[in-house]
Image 1 (tube, one colour):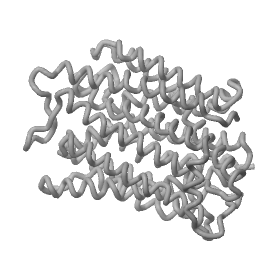
Image 2 (cartoon, one colour; image 1 turned 135 degrees about the horizontal axis):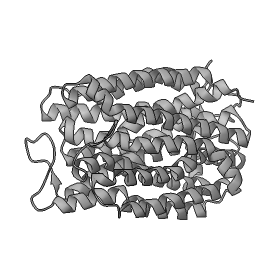
Image 3 (tube, one colour; image 1 turned 60 degrees about the vertical axis):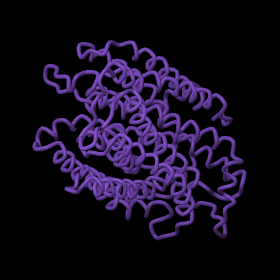
Image 4 (cartoon, one colour; image 1 turned 60 degrees about the horizontal axis):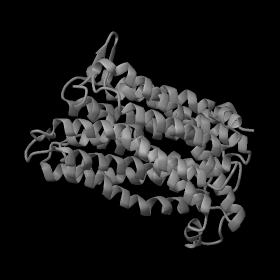
Length: 445
C-alpha cells in the first residue's frame, strides 16, 4: 500500500505541470503574446495551431518510447528526474521578451513554444503513465488521481492569486514583470518535478512488447473506450481552455481592467483563483462523490451537468464590475463540477490502459496516457488560438507597428459580447458534447 509521502510526491508532479506551467500557459499566454510580447492576433493563433499539429506526432511517440524505457530508476520516473530542469528553463525563456525586431521575436516565440511542448510531453506523459504502475488497486488509483488534482489546483491557486501581487512587488514594465515571474515559477516547477520522480515508486512491471511495432498505434483505434475517453478529454480541456484564455480579455474589454474591492485586487488570475480553491476541495472529495454516484461514469455526468447549467447562466450576468461577486459565485459553482470530473478522467485512463493490456496482451500504458496529455495540450492551445481568431472576427485587430490590439471603430459591443460568450455560451456548448460522449463511454466502473 502506498504511503502518504508517496501520494504527496505524486501530487507534486501535477502541482508543477498543471498548477504552474500549464496554468500560466492556459490563462496568460494568449494575452501575454498579443498584449505584452507584441505578436499579432494572427501570429498568436498560428503559433498555437502549429504547436498542436506538432503534438499529434510527438505525444504518441513519447508514450511508446516511455513504455520501452528501462533504467535503474524504472520505466517512467527517469523522464521526470532528468526532464525537470529543461522544463523550468524553457518555461522561463518563454515569458522573457527579447530585445529583437518583429521577425526575431516571432522566431523566439515559435522556437521556444515548440520546445516547451516537446519537454512538457517528455515529462508529463511519463508522469501520467506512472499511475498505471504504482498500484493495481482501483480505489488506490482513484486516491492517487485525487491527490494529483488537489496538488494541481492547490498550486494553481497559489500561482494565480500571487500573480498581481508579484507584478506589483517586482515593478517595472509588464515585460520585465512577466520575465521575473517566469524565472521564479520555472525554478519552482523544476524542483517539484524532480521531487516527484524521486518520491514515487514503480511497483508493477509493464508487459513489454518484444520489439518496437506500429501495432499498438493501430490497436488504439480499435479500442472503443480509448476513442470515447480521448474525445471527452479534448472536450474537458476545450471547456477549461476557453474560460481560462478568455478571462484576461474579459477584464480588459468588458470590466474596464482590474476590479478593486476592500483588501483585494481582482484581476483575471485572481478571478480564476476562486475556482482553483473549489476545484482543490472538490477534487479531494471526488472519490467519495464517485462512491455515492455508484460509478465513475455517473459521477462524471452529474459534474458535467453542473458545468453546463452554470456556464449558460453566466452569460446573462451584466458586464459590470458591480456584479463581480455574482460572477465569482458562478465560477465557484462551475468549479465544483470541474473539480469532481478532473481526477476521474485520469483514473478512467488507467481503466482504459488495463482494458488494452487484457485485450492485446502487452502494455501500452504510456501510449494511452499520452493521449490524455495530447488532449490537454490540444484543447487548451486550440481554444487559445480560436479565441484570438473569434476576437479578430468581432473587431479586435493589431495595426502594423502597434504593441497591442485595438477595437475597430463601431465594434466595441461586438467584441464585448464575443468575449463574454467565449467565457460562457461556447464552453456550455462544449459541455453538451462532453456529456454525450461520457454517456456513450462503454466502461462502467
